Length: 333
Image (cartoon, rainbow, N blue to C red; front, side, top):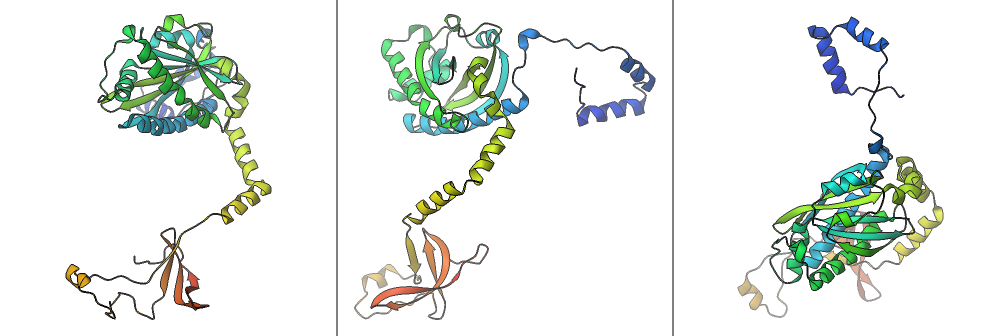
């Protein structure tokens, strides 16, 4: 059995107890000699490391951002989605933790085996439906009496969100998610055995004035083929491979060279009254805030990049680059 590592807080508490006399050092030595037994619940077997859980959390943080943008555009209201927690629990515990009547979407994630579940809290689901039908986003829980039209509208909205799931997982694996089932009673869903370990990603969700949770249940059988890719070591190798690929770098450079950019040179600015503007005549002179001896600024997509001086080339107005404007240099609009 692996040795237990104490945190810094536990070490400080232990030293404090020894110095205050609350704990006897001899007693600690005796406990070390005694054989220790740790209780282990095989029903709650931890099949994912902390490193892998962190990777799954990172993927779904990106998914939450994509989903926020998607629902904001579709529903035209305030939407905020963020990752609340990522846990590994038995499938039976997940089923018991969600409402007896709720909105459940079952997706296949080809080429991975098995299926995943999206559980939308009724408060959230009905707020979305109300916005789609032109309402203010009010939440009314009537899962038991869903009409066929309401079911179809919800299914279409959730199915279109699958592009965001595909994008979030692209850094690890290319998946083709597809909505396979729409259910309201979790007791009718038996994707895996009750003791099978699943990863549950809980997302805090706010739609307008309504709030609730979106829970994503991913069985171990789905993630098993890509578990090695969920480690930090794999991510670092992937990033290093990208950086060390000269062909990709060259292709990227060539494509950037073809990009069209907007160049602007500001000759100067001034402020005049509306009356002066209306009474301008031919040959009138407007005094600008730039001296003829001062260099002008060449702006690339509205960002100052070079000091230039005006002139002509082949009877056309032109500017000559003097020097680059470095970051940190003072620049007056």
